[in-house]
Image (tube, rainbow, N blue to C red; front, side, top):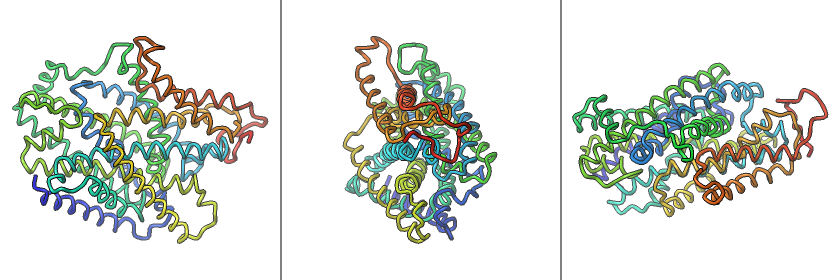
Length: 494
């Protein structure tokens, strides 16, 4: 693809985003930034959240991993369906009942202010690492396949893309990104369908014929049956449940969009519709992955993993398909970064700085919010450059591993708050939240010695949450008064 054509395509796409931003952010205030003034229609939020949940990592890594892990990723998705149900019918009613702007305010009210800041801190760490890993993979593809031909350095590519994201999220926040995410989800899904149709035509196969060809090549196994393996089906389904609860239900970015819906019923519909559509989309990604591997074998290509999809497109597809691929890739990139940047700004301002409790004017509040927003954009840039140095082969596996360590304490904190009535020693909660992932790291490093053939996989998240829960139990005692579960007041031993 000619770099000049790429530049024109990207600029036209970005101008479209700015136009949407201009229309949607007019008159936006701080509450519009944080929760869209709680007026967003649920179908819009549901469709836009598909792009946020999938991201560029799903677009590239899930198809690329089919050669190594077949369709085992579908095991995780089956767990996701159960997890989305828990989020819809357990967590969302709690958030709406308390009229939360930041979901970590629940932990502050239930366990104490130190606990709330600890929860927010782990979200900030989790989402910063996860979002930049997702962002990196798309920037790397654009850089390696297109922009390097112009001699554009990687850092400049990353800086320009982050500047674009800042420009359309700085003012509108959630009020804007529910609209831009809808546009971007449409672009990503169009690219997915177009590439699938092209490969079916290139292979001269009907969908069922292609499925049979994949089966003959051993590319479509869904359930792994080796109990000791990391991807054993029960482990993956269980992990999928808790990954969804933690990375969706306990994640400010995802819940910030959900609680921007006018009613609880609408937010629950949003979650269930998104779950059903997500399952279908992931099946199509896995089918595309099988087609890519069949095509690569036919052409004698050596590319595998994350490199496979872009290699097939850039080396064997016509220019029109390359344009569609780049547009789809950019569409997958932006939702994984814009919502994260907005949610991190919200959580830092509300949970760490406590900016709403300071009695600032609307203008002063906005100045603080802008400064935090730009600060996180700078952090994103530094971490994207760090991922370039690491250059991990499969980013989706890296992201899930990171999540196992960083979302575990969130899982433990919320579980303790919802499932027990005990009071904690609030000022010591952060030590439990830090020790749990450190213990998990030790267990992970000693697996071969301690467990012989058994290997812990994605269930590390559940183990991490359980260790946090046990630590909180040790630091707690029975309440001295009745009826405080979900209370608006902190209940801790301080």
